[in-house]
Image (tube, rainbow, N blue to C red):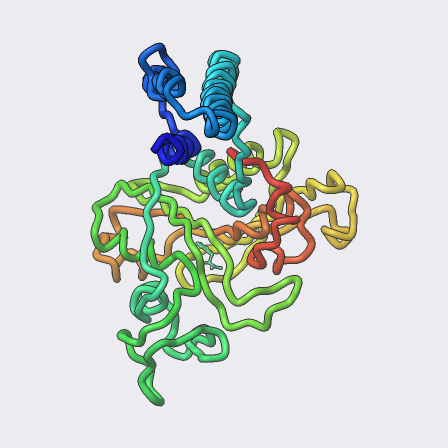
Length: 345
Ligand code: PHE
């Protein structure tokens, strides 16, 4: 009888678990206190037959020791956990958060937008998949203009043989956003149109089939070429430093008349001549001009009342000048060794 009871209690003791100090104390009371189950077996032991005493006595002692040990073990566990909790320093600053970096093109795009927004330009965006009308037609491109050729532009839907205003293509410049703004807003208009553009070119260190532009448009009464020049001079100095000089060279774009290309004094060699500026001391950074009256009229703006200027610059080009990135492909390859060199905010 007593033998079985000892076995039973031993099994229970070995299984003992406690979730709190109170539960542990309850176990101690259940088994080892004065009225505990193990203690009462010791009182019964007095009545055991003499020949069984030795064997049962050993087992009973073993049971008591096991129970005491097990309770001590559980107590030690609680105390260790409590000590750990007491040692926690809740005033410690958390581990520093590792910030990612921002893409160099995003950094420069934001900087360009910031500079122009200080003089009143607001941002407008438009679709990358466009129709011929908004990319070429309303911008005074002749029907036979080479940009309307598959070799220069990615078409998505193109009518065989003829050129149609409804042909669907990937925009080749963000001037398409300007046509959308001019047809939906009334002057004065002063907008910046940043975005990705696509051209059908072989990919190399110096050319890619997509790149990024920020174009600007200002339309109001009495806007002059002098206004354009002064705005671009302000931009060049803000972007490349107060000593930067600009020069405008006559050029041609279907949508501006007169048109110009703007160079800045090479910010790498300071204008003395280096490999980046091919020894000239100047680097081209944007195209610009006075909005052609045909464009204003095709967008429903009275060209006798209003004039305007437009300019368009390549974000990659400005980024190369700022950060001296030699290979355009680096911008789209997602190589973290390149990207992590740029700041995070
Ligand atoms: N749209 C022209 C281009 O993509 C840039 C430009 C914009 C030129 C506005 C003049 C005026 O090259």
